[in-house]
Picture 1 (cartoon, rainbow, N blue to C red):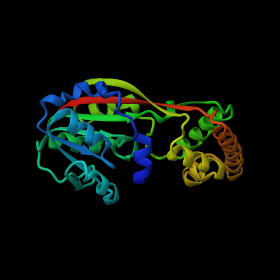
Picture 2 (cartoon, rainbow, N blue to C red):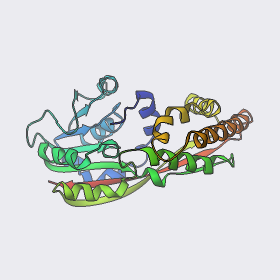
Picture 3 (cartoon, rainbow, N blue to C red):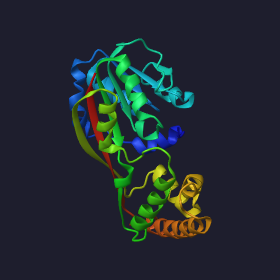
Picture 4 (cartoon, rainbow, N blue to C red):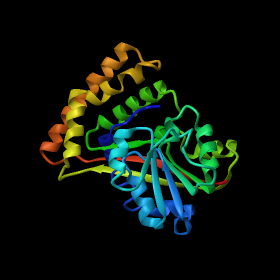
Length: 264
């Protein structure tokens, strides 16, 4: 399973549930007594579940570094998604966000979720193959698409799962309640945050692509193709920095998420 830093999770999930909590309507949060958030990361969704339900919410993650942050939101436990340290029917709702896309055996994980839930299981999963980017730097959208395609070609898990979580749920023996789509927009515009400035710096240096180099080269991308991509990426990054210095840079990334709810 891929590992993520706390900074990465906080950045990618920042503001996701600020104006989209209607996407969680079919989780029937008002009627919940005990909720388990598996793969909770730093606790962004855990906090939302607690605020919307009033139930006892527990976070679970395999990474103790992430749990250190999540523990400020709710009680947490270190656990593997496929071997949860809970008895059968311990909770009445199990939720995960962007977890199944990173697991080699998502069906096995959902079967485990169903074991510990007495009622509902829900998954909030993106389709990373359908992400779109709009930018005032003309070169950025096609380069972002090219880099994403190269990366997805090298990933071993199904990071485009999205609405396909329905099939995973059905294979795990759950009855589908619903699937709702929510498009999460991340906008970079002046005045620029520290995170936006750091992201621009990483474009100029090519650090972001360097982090993904091993995965990209695991697909059909050659060393030469990777080097060409990184050179173009760094040139694009310089244009981003130039526009930022004039407060003209605007970037919108849209990530489609699908909230799938199943009944045990």
